[in-house]
Image (spheres, rainbow, N blue to C red):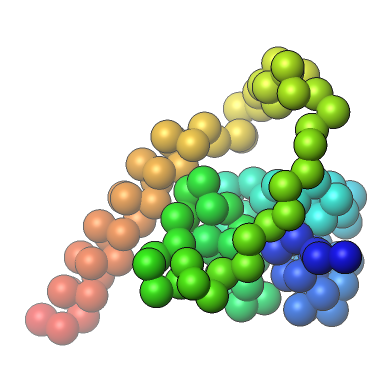
Length: 124
């Protein structure tokens, strides 16, 4: 059975409890990520840094694979959803801490701009 990226990340750092300690969250939150394969946008970069599992595998909707990575990236098995008629937002309310895909992309763009600015300052 192929493990999803979240489960591979947990195994890479020593298990779900170890990943929870690294992220500063509950083991139940990590278990949910491993069970569903869905990683919250605000955790992707932390998990990537800790486990070396690429961000494009953790959240391909936010970090599409580059053409050079697409050939090596494993494709996740498609699994039919039991609730195809309901979107996740319809099943449960959105919390204030949840980011939409657009908000996450805007946050990533801001971080990349800031990174470029810091690199220019460091060189200058």
